[in-house]
Length: 253
Ligand code: BGC
Image (cartoon, rainbow, N blue to C red; front, side):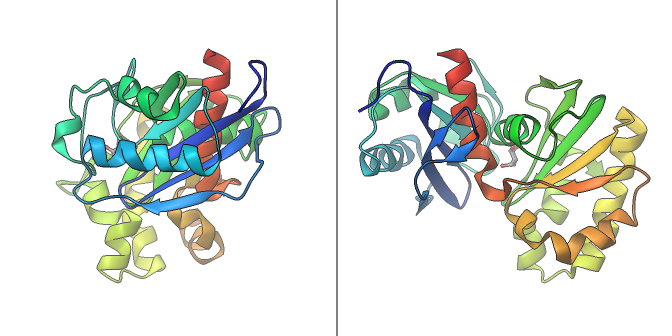
């Protein structure tokens, strides 16, 4: 379905709640068709998720190289953590598993790292030098850190302990909604997290992405009051993972 030199690659973003995919023009960072979202099967076991990945590829009549973003530590296609998916993923060569379902080579990357690649290349991080930290707020809290545009992979800042508890268990978007925490109160909690990151990494910019980013007007004013560092919302919102994964797949193909 695609020519070998095509700039249109399939991107898929696997999350704890939904699995989203679309073909991406990796030269422009645009989705070329409306994305498809399917609920993440529960329990989120490998075969069940791989079948959804195949469903997405079939929906777009796609076979060829694909980029897949996954909510875990990922090295060389292998999964090393499982906070929001089933534990049976740990140590699994997930890239190999997915390759059987999309009919082409699969580039696998942590979901927040994928979002970071998309934003640095096409979105809110374009041309930004120095240290840029992107944080995603969805089912969990994901992180990506860049220095002069270069990514340090698999950071897990969501696991930083703030007042004795992993910040992602206190203030991910899932927890905020579940506990009906107001954006003002949420910004107070996240402010401590941002100031901790400020002390450790002296960033030039924080980018906020993930499911929460579509409500930027509601939380950004509160969050900006918490930090000396400029804070902006991600431009690609919830499509950043799809776009970044497809872009990386093109770079690696
Ligand atoms: C995982 C990260 C992931 C983040 C966002 C966390 O629970 O540990 O690897 O990036 O959720 O999905």
